Length: 459
Figure 1 (cartoon, rainbow, N blue to C red):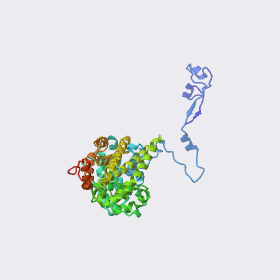
Figure 2: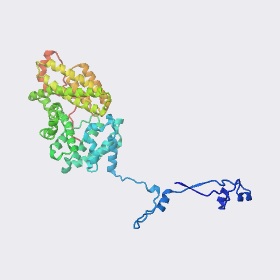
Figure 3: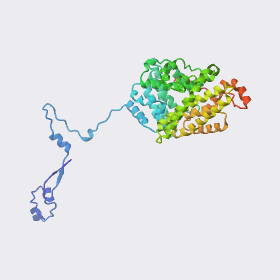
Figure 4: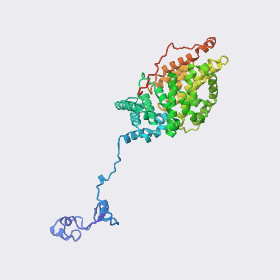
């Protein structure tokens, strides 16, 4: 709104709309009327709306185009269209923008960042994303809201209906929705909630055709889903992993240079525990190759720390990988040393080193709690079950208590007792003679101290 010059008459003449001679100190009219003469000869400005003047003055050169009507400023504000899908996407993208490794959703898989592109294409996926964003606050506040529980229950109902559709049950969107619901359960579940999703995942994954899951999102999703199935197969040996798992992971495993990180080898943990004597040669081969694998990851972690400016996300991810390798190595150590009559003490010393490394790793990973160090408790559980040293067990229990405060659903001490019993059942008959000769006492629970996971709540 620029100013333009106006007349220089005094205020009295301007008010009466009379001509002013602009004389000083008084104009002729003010002198005759004997009144005050204010502003005589002063330059003034008046202000006009530039947008209105442009609309009036600037006309189109084209004779066929009609001039645009004047639109008030408050009506010219543009509003973006919005619906339920865009609201869900916006809330989820806000959660993805959090780069603090302690609350980074990327810990649950690299495919997570591509989920927003699929919102609006699947009712089950939309409902599960909505439930995830609602329960995400529980990670920060460690408390559950009514809205979060309602969205979680609604998402379960939508997912059940989707699984009844043969065309959608095995789709990537449905599998992703199930995985997100499993994550939600881990955040807001109670201690007595030991629901198993592994059998449901195993059934759906067994129907997947690899040639139909070639996209990056789908491939990363499949590899991520295999991990919880492998873990739950230890507690539920009736979960069949072969031959579908090898078919899905063959390309990924062939490209992996480390035997300890190949999913087809991890999938054999259940067989190793329940039937160690039938897989003795294979266990020895994997265990021997793990020495070099552990050294590589250990050296890489040390290099990251020595660099000074630590990339916290990269550091936490490699800590998780190192923890997986340590867990695998400690389980194999317990099983193999029952057959190693000549090298029993040597294997026991190696186990002591592995447990010490696990404790040091868990202590350092505390800076990334809760999400960035979510793999540390599992490694501590394996360490507690693998060692008989009281000092090591006490320190492992102290760390498990700290991590227990993050999520209530897993009772780490009970899981440690349960794994110890399973390892003992698998090799006790072979190591009892060696243990008695060496004077080593191994406490074995008389019965399972945790319940076997119940059927998937979705199924």
